[in-house]
Image (cartoon, rainbow, N blue to C red):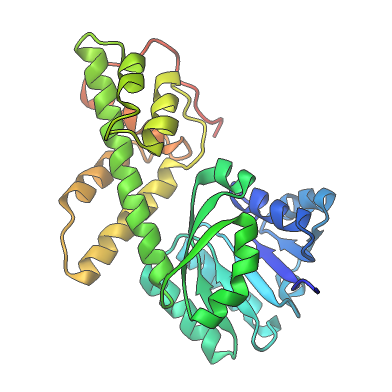
Amino acid sequence: MTLPTLAFLGIGLMGKPMATRLAKAGYPIRVWNRSPDKAEALRAVGAVPHADLQDAVRDADIVISILAAGPAVGEVLDAALPALRKDALWIDMSSTRQDEALALHARLVDAGCRFVDAPVSGGVAGAEAGSLAIMAGGATADFDDARPVLETMGSPTLVGPAGSGQVAKLCNQLIVGATINVVAEALLLAQAAGADPAAVRAAIRGGFAGSRVLEVHGQRMLARNFVPGGQVKTQLKDQRNILAAAREAGVRLPVTELVTRQFETIALALPSADHSAALIALERMNPGKRVGVKADTLPDH
């Protein structure tokens, strides 16, 4: 069976391991990034780097983008559109607003192409392991064409028409952002009240409070390791997108409003830190209270 030719746009924290998995699975894959050296690094795994965006997407069967935000996807689409072949399938795996995904869908349909929005959850570890949760929005036939490619990177689920993948991702990020902050509060309370926070985490892991966030981010907080993973600036972008979606839907999300304000307090000082740095935001609200005695490990920039 002949595998479709892929163009993968965006070789960042998530894009690099995702594109690597596709290359190792045998897909003919071209890779592009605004910083060409990042794309060039994937030559070693069989990908073909392209410095020119239109060269990367020309005659590709499927284009996959995972970029910083909706405006960046729109700019890349503007530049790529003249070189797209008719009926090409564009899978956007970035985290954007629903209205941005719908606008991308409309533009591609007008150009005779197809679109699936397929944001992901699972972080860099999930991208490396091929275990990402992939939330897809689009026509059933388009999702069926995308499915084999998506299954190389994780577990895709069609959740509705175009734009619905972004709604599902926002729901995911709503839960993640709130839970990170609640785990930070639990560990700080344990420490301040005289219990061992590591032992408290171990004691509650098997109960109803157990979660992936408690496992991964709870351990990050105890180790005070804030090298990303997901970044504060990315989580804050998602928080703001959640609130925008809520306004559009006519609902108010008071917990999400509080969580957004928490991330805003560290966004300027620690934009590239892991989003588990919500613990630092909480500690700044509680002078003299701190989880553990280890020094913070933070990203270089």
